[in-house]
Length: 305
Image (cartoon, rainbow, N blue to C red; front, side):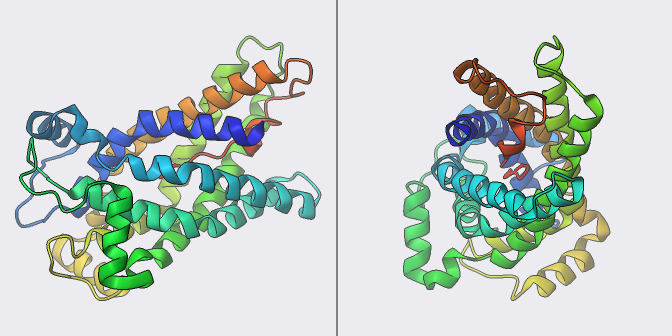
């Protein structure tokens, strides 16, 4: 039931947060010489006007498809790691989350690659005259045909660098918040407290690793037009700083933080209500019990978050 609840909660989070993720990616990878968007609101406005509301949901198939596998990995690794570590402490929550974040990169990286490529497809066009990719699976298949496994795993190192501490920070922040709020099942404010803890944990997680996410998005979007700008992580970082300064690492941050809270809130609301419904005879003793197994996913990372 934890697994099923996590899947349902993750799906709710993707539906709520994907438009913000599309805006984030567009802002992160747009050209500094000829920017298409002036900021978060203008990007939203432009996509809706030029590509309709459906433009905000480009690439949603990829995170939806990867959701079940990612949650299965996260639940299994996090739960087993906590059992191995034994004591439920904030440090162990961080370590268990970091382990789960690292291992799920195997699915997360190709999923986000397809998502990013789909989100960049037909930029500024209401109806694309020529679509390079039909859907997320077609995108990954075409990348594999051209570049092999290395192409499908483009951005794996940056994904690992982002997800490992990001998941650790998420679990740590959530653990600390739920402990401090101390809600009980009969508490009328239990659900709002869970939503607040989940939302704020997602924000903390994104803030801790956001610069890495910018580089990851640029590496995964590189080559969409047929030409490659970056040869490595360091090359991408160096060129980005040279051309745009240190502020490059805040590109798309507003839309990411705007997305983080409602995504995590939607996920935790769905997970909590589902578990309370199916386990009415065996309800969690406190607000930490069930949601500790309800991982948020960005992208999510806790974004996913």
